[in-house]
Image (cartoon, rainbow, N blue to C red; front, side, top):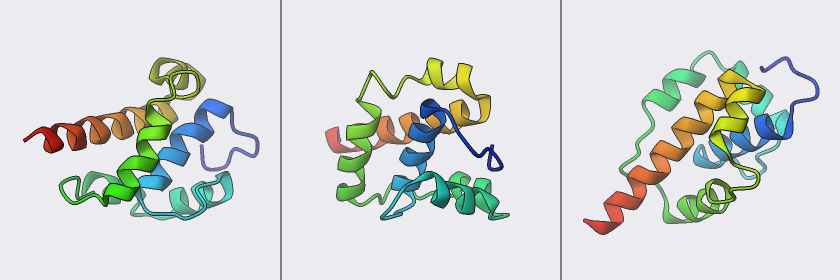
Length: 103
């Protein structure tokens, strides 16, 4: 995926969400390629501190994951399985953060 020159819009939206979680100020495809090239990319996602996410990040992510037209995990998965896995991660972390608000 990181070597793709022209990603689908579904792939881009999944990576935009990941980069938003990671605190990138400009979550675009170029930044995504650099981020995915990091040998610790998946390790960083696995170790992501979902209990201490900045509320500003959650608000940005909320706009992405609740956009049912552009952020559809099934469509993302059909477009690119790796991007689909990242979209699932984004949605799971978002839902987890929402349950923390209710506690």
